[in-house]
Amino acid sequence: MGMLVTLEFADAGVKTGSHRVFVLQRNAGLTESGDIGLTLAEGKQLLECVQHEFVAAQGEEIVARARTCPRCGRRLAMKDVERRRVHTLFGRVALSATRWISCDCDGSCRRAFSPLRGWLSRSNNELSYQAARWGSAYSYRAAAAILQELLPVDWRFGHVRIREAVLEAGSRLEKEPELPTIPEFRPFGSMDAPATMAFDGGYARRVRKGRPRNFEILTGVIQKHKKIKVFATAYPNRVALPDRLRRFAASAGVLNDTFVNVMTDGAGSLLRLKTMLPMKTRFVLDYFHIAMKLRHIDQSVGRIPPCRLSPGGSIFELCDRSNYLRAYVWTGRRDKFEESFHTMLQLFDRAKALLPDDADAATVALGHVCDLWGYLQTNAAGVVNYQAWKLSGQRISSSGVEGTVSHLIGRRLGKGQHMCRTKRGAHLLLQVRCALLNNELLTVFRRWHWEVGSYRAALPWEWRP
Image (cartoon, rainbow, N blue to C red; front, side):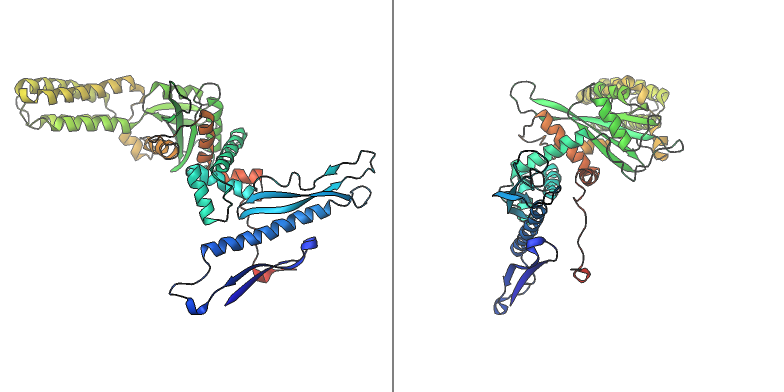
């Protein structure tokens, strides 16, 4: 069997009429089981042929409309014809760009001009959007390979052009005065539970040699009504960071008079973010890091054999005290925690005296308990009743931001690989990646180019020539 695909234009100037674009041949006697429909190569070639005819018709229509002088109506003379090429999502299209000689009816000198100047670019907007989207999710070479494998994107549109599209989109996102507000993030009122912001830091490899070889990346999330919005920047300085945080909070609907819980692991570099936020804040110590320290205590206590360490006590007194310690931290009872801490110190001293062979294990356990004590004393202002907070539906752990660090930095910036980046390049890539994860990238691209992602096709029976 054979199929001839024709393209019909109703009002495309010189391109009006039917045009043969594609011929498909199949031998019915050589078909096998499952040999149904078009192959990927045939579909890509069909799209490329249709795209070439459509772009050529668009260009000729623009050129034909510009031949008449808008002031006197005189037909302009032709200067020459250039051959222009543009990358599209469905192939690299070559078209003729005619140049006209302007009219001197307004008293100006005659000069040559191209009607397609400003309309043609190195790549169309749809391809730029897809390149920025895939380039922010995968490496530039992998993104180029995906586009070229699934779509008839020309091989000349490689990883370098993908990188340029990502950095250009990141630069424009950086200059946006206000990011779009996600519909799920309605403005917070006084009757709502406080919003929760969590911050953490990561590192990426620097391109230049010498020390330091890494630079810091600040990541953060904001949660409200089980919706999460992510944020990242490679410039965690006091100059531009307050404005970035303001834009980040405003895009999630957090107003300046809103009360926000700021959750961190107690690092000094993250605590200073409280003073940069434009809203009222309260510091909350992340329970995830407390639980890690409690787990170390449980593991070290488990290496000490059961033994009666105090008169009338149980042989499992150390394990019981460890559980009490966890319960007191969970419920925020600082007085009981201090009492249990001093009791455990005495029990460890007796364990070292009664069990000389396990003195090293008791010393390690004692060190973990003292580490937890010092950690809680340093961040005493952030210790809350985690049980009550969890029952009320508020966030008690920054595990979401820990996953954000892994997703933004570890997977894309190659934290565990030998990938090096400039600080600005990493920052712009993070802006595009955050916009993609927040479902903002398409919305912002439509601000710049309204036709990106728009659905303008019609069904065949709706054709009106």
